[in-house]
Image (cartoon, rainbow, N blue to C red; front, side, top):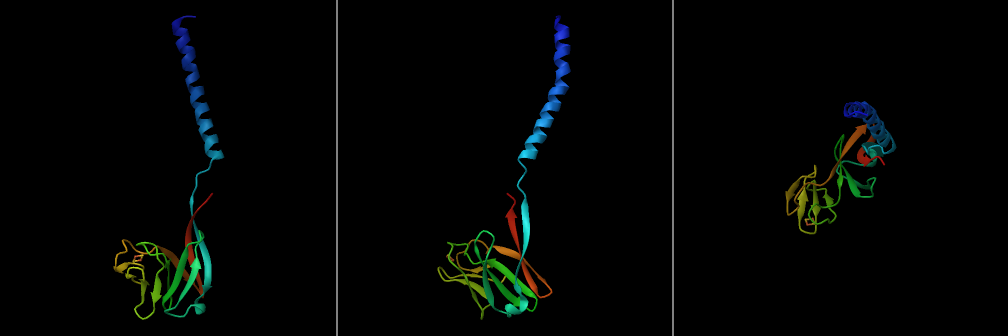
Length: 144
Ligand code: FES
């Protein structure tokens, strides 16, 4: 076989190899689907179960503590009770309408923003929705 023929034969396999690689990549993608972020809307309680300026504790889908606070006629906030400083539990102070961390006097407003003390960042918050009389919280979760 001449050298020229050998190169021609070799080049004939390039498209075949490319097609094989593409099919293999599609197969791997099919077998190992990507993980996706899912947003789950979870019913928590009826609005009348949470009078204005009161709180109710819950756990998120990962078992982390969170609290619902009714801050207005049709306004409910949901946030983690874990202080962003060193992880102590924060409490809602009705009179001041603030979250208070007793460990180092950290304070957060009703939106979870730091207003005093050493916490370096806001409390983790969750999106809420009031639909009719039902209060929902949105959780982020990863699809397995
Ligand atoms: S742990 Fe909350 S202020 Fe330090």
